[in-house]
Image (tube, rainbow, N blue to C red; front, side, top):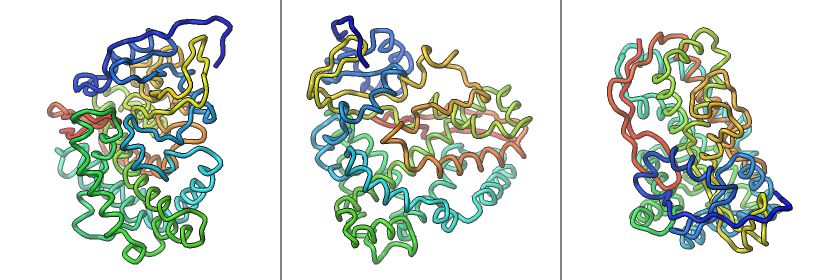
Length: 396
């Protein structure tokens, strides 16, 4: 990330966290990419990286762009997330990540989820009988909620239904200071209270992700706080982002009937089509890092101690890297998307999310000839995540 030519950092008053920008960020990402390799957003004193090459390089350079001071855009959220895998650098990150990876091994996933393909077949059979349904709650959420809740080991009680709401609030709380961020603090409190009081080792389902994490804490491999924060991180990221990715991909396929026809004709396109949906509608739009020293990015110096917004979503639509970046192409297969993060902080739940999505769209491709939108989707602005609240759809 070096250059022999020095350039002054471009400044802008553009606020990526306004309601308007959160509901339709794509044109703003284009503006920011066009401004330069680094953009200083004065509204929140954030340096931003929005081009693919610069984002990917920063994600690799964990020594210069550190997660250890938190990845949120406000100090309170960063303090609360201390001990989270997201807020660590190696070598500590490796130790905690190993526990998480061990708990998410395919044998444990299959043990909890059983035959994911059969579950997807049964779900889609039911939706084919109904014809009209909501693509978020009825298609995108059903499998992840049932599987992930059991995988983590949450007790099967009425509290489960609230976790999705709390998780979205927790992501909102990671944004810069403001009314939207502050309004979601009760969700953060409720989620942490649930984890402390109701998701204790003695109440978790046997042989679950949570039990494995707490056993690692008992052996001294991670601290109790790290165990708690690992549970919190997967409760949030394992649910909302998968639901958002699946529902958004369904929306894109419904908008592009020629691409749905291509998937039906060649079901081997399903995994790549899901990656394309994640690329275009990146569920985690951005996190932040802090520079540990002056960092040169294509001739622009980011000063030591700066908080840097690393925009996965903007990078995923960078025309310098992806031809026709705003078009949905089921055969593109963007395996290099940063929609699941990259390098040290690549998403540990990517395998499970892909298994669920591939099973769902594989089942749908065998049955549904057409996907038709029957109304306008509804989207709720969130500081960090991008997803749909409702997606009225008809299949036949």
